[in-house]
Length: 296
Image (cartoon, rainbow, N blue to C red):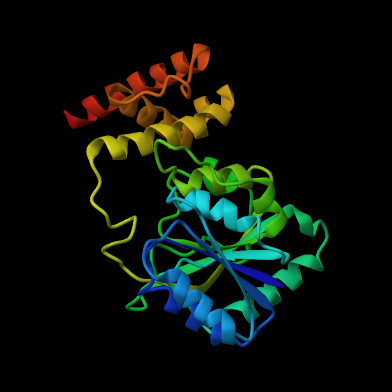
């Protein structure tokens, strides 16, 4: 039923967490896809060692060069053959009942009218000390569109969330990639949510471990941060309508971020232009003026 997709890069000392979590699952109808982003450590040796004696199917794919997590994820999705795909990071764990719980939820979805409208199930995440990261969903079993989840809210729902997806949805809507910068994952998830509802469930499955060598913990230069802001805002604004940018606080914030980043970095091949650029600059000036007034 499930394809468990793990992207990894030089995580030979951590990837055992995922493997051990899979071994402990009470529901065993799954395959494990490991998409290695060109590791230089002994990840390949470790995974292939498990593959020899594993009771479940393990597929190991190694990219020729290190390109970034999104590239490895897209390559891994192409290898997923089960109806539902779960992205399990190399340094995380999840409870033994996780796959059974998700099977029950997805079976319930598939027995409802217009079941294909739901493209993903999102659950909650805790840290290594069993503390919820962020906040729960406003409602349990909340079937939600992009408009309701993002555009109609004054504030984003805080914290890490964990996702299981219809595999065909991920194959159709690959993650945004750019050779110049990492793109915020939320940009890709938002694009999918414009076409499919998400079912948000207040149950904790994944345990996130703080890893000093992980992407989120690495110290980043100012220009690297601005590049990510620039491209993430660009992709969001480029696909949004004029009406959405004007009326949704979410897009007005993106407009402000885009212009701020643009002062320091600009990609001449990927940039807003024409009337949309004028609109974004106008919103930036309004928000800047409001910030200055509020300071005084």
